[in-house]
Image (cartoon, rainbow, N blue to C red; front, side, top):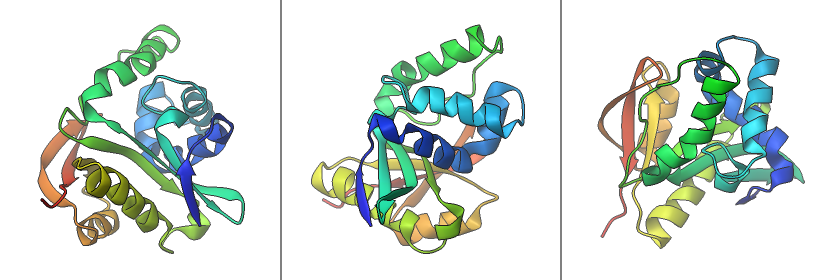
Length: 187
């Protein structure tokens, strides 16, 4: 498995894997539970620069030459700037109100979404991607990593805790109460 920075040509794969991680949230954003519309929405943003879902902020896992997973990560201090293109699109194109709440803030690099091909889930791909981010952001650069986990996803929480993430509170996001976990580099 090779984990690498995403390229613009990876956008269709990134969109599909990010949708696996945030399906209900995207449906809420676009106002319909239509999977094709949700994929189109995410593909629109993953293929473009300067937004929170952009390929610029993603890593992909390639296995035997095929993208099998994607993760989006960015500086939490940049949330408002990176979210604005998404918010503008939702308000202007979809004609919907948009105020899901702040899922991150300054002081952490935020793991927005992580999705793995369903055939490979539970086989260590997601853990390897998280370990890659921990090495790059926490160990090499000294940044705190943060993420949100749904209380209805105890398996994901167990993985995060096993990798060294610790609970730091709760956040309201897109109408849900989610647990906020962080990985802080050891000094």
